[in-house]
Image (cartoon, helix red, strand yellow):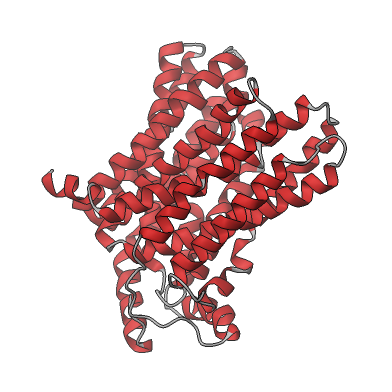
Length: 417
């Protein structure tokens, strides 16, 4: 227990927490908070819907991640230098957003919102790389939990708190205050040390663009690892994809769903990520992936029980708590695994690429869920959600081979990790 507390009390975790906060601030300002502002200005709903496209940079950030690996700013180093640049640009673009006119000039607002998401996605690229390089492998799970904690706190600030403030001041003032909160990240970037990585940055742009992909795909077992990344959280994605329609169908109100899933469920997810990260210090990545993978799969059974018993408030709270808590634990182990795969020469690019593969699961697996639930019924649907956890666990039997092959590959190419 003392060793766990010492890990969470380290300066590295404090930096990761604050960087998580800085990364979480912009998201709501270009999503839910922006939608509320536009609705209050009587902007047409069609236009508001189209504005969801401003989040596209988050899904394609791997395209320019090589630039952040290749070029080193002339101050603070490769990671902190880019963090400071993106954060300063975020302050300016968020402030400019707040000074725009949603009703009179929606096109200008759209341009500014895209700039915010682009700079925000860029900050995420560098923050993920910094976290991967500054933490020890044994701290990856705990670091994932702490980063999520900071990120979620920031989303409350730029989401719920911003909306409350908007009832008492202008939207320009709200966005100016939100821009000012990024001073937390700016100060952290200036004061935090640059990661000590015994790996030179790519010498050419071609090397920065091509080598991260070539390096990973040349590893024996690379496609197995990619398959694992795509399917390990498949059961969680399918379980949560139909939560709202399921809850409404069995008689819960929108208030019930909002209060429990968005409030209690969020707390459970954060708690699970932190607890999972804590246990990982003792378990290691492999055992954590096994234990948490089984738990998150079984937790889906609580939804199957709820489907059987129907409208039962305590069971509904228990199901949401269990699913979010155990999926949070699985997320800590999963994130640590992805971090462990990155070659330190190309951390930004490889992490951005692998995290984009993680997003494939949400997009592809979510598409047929409505049809399956409609055809088979809720109990059978959630039984399937439990069963789809099995392929990921079967692939996990290859973990020892993956780690051995990765170590052999890195030794062969002379790349430090």
